[in-house]
Image (tube, rainbow, N blue to C red; front, top):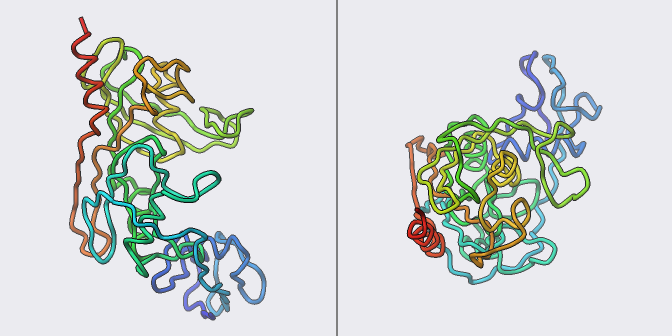
Length: 300
């Protein structure tokens, strides 16, 4: 694909527009060295001049190495552009080591058929943002690259709102606040994340205590950024890890939880095509509600 730059001064990654391609896919083409300017491999930040010849080598979309599986989905909303899914606790989002079947992607491949986005040259349902295996709740899925690009941009620009509810281990001593602490890979345990200044990205979580329980708090969290394990890491960082989180909290599990008591409760965004403001809410699963009631009854 060849493009002649008609006006100079713009960054390459901002100038290139390809129908049905998201910004993330265009950026990946650049990062993979598949974009040249006047015959030389270019960087996204390179400034263009009028008349520059941009050539883009678009690889053929290859199928995802995962099988479609007829797994029930709790679909909160769906149209030809996107879905909102209420993911159950215990379901992995993407296939990976040790989890090649039974994932949300396997289920979406069966449900969506050929209606799959092609982010990064791989045909797969466009998971816009992830939630952990043991976290339940709402997440966005894009059927087209245009929808994926719009929804991803809204998350980046903080116009999409994602709210979670969780139960912390211990009574939080402040009613509301903001945790602004960078998150990166743990220095020695590579499967963990940590608050660190090394190789990290900024991370901001807003929290509000909804109710004090027996040696626990019911807390609402709103993500301003979306780093891996962000809420879990941030709450543990201030001394109140989430109940059931054996990675960032206590190793003991007195309530026999299957994972952290964390649920993506509410999400709002502008529809990627119509621009209509949309908001969806789903209550936490039964185990979560029962635990809250148990902690209320024992709270003095």
